[in-house]
Amino acid sequence: MRVKELLRRYARGERSFREADFHGADLTEALLAKADLANSNLHGADLHGADLHSARLHGANLVGAILIGTDLSGADLRGADLHGADLHRATLRNANLEGADLHGADLTRADLNGAILHEADLRGAILSADFTGADLRRVDLTEADLTGAILTKTCLG
Image (tube, rainbow, N blue to C red; front, side, top):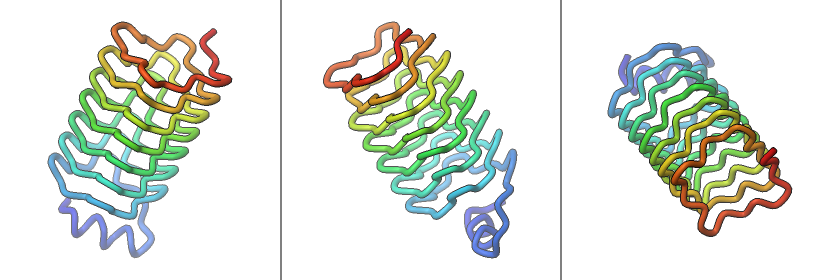
């Protein structure tokens, strides 16, 4: 499916695009709130400034994706591969990132308030982020740079 087709179908009210291939696609500022993109290939896609709040992205391939300023609040990113993704200034409030691979991801100034990061891999990630209220139990923080991270009321148990 092509990007134009995705956006046309979304505008008509369709929300399910599971296992779609958008490798390297330009989805800059796309309005895809509540879209079901579970297990989709978004490897290297440009989602800069996109609205993906409450989207279903579990198991999605977002390796190297550009998610700068993207709204992923309430998104289901369980098991998603975000290895090396650029999430600079992304909003991940209340997002479920359980088991997600964030190895080497840039989370500078990302808002992770209330995010679930159980068993997420944050090795080598840049984490100058707001983790207020985030659940970081069993999160792999090996070699993670927490410089400037805000950890108020964060569960590290």
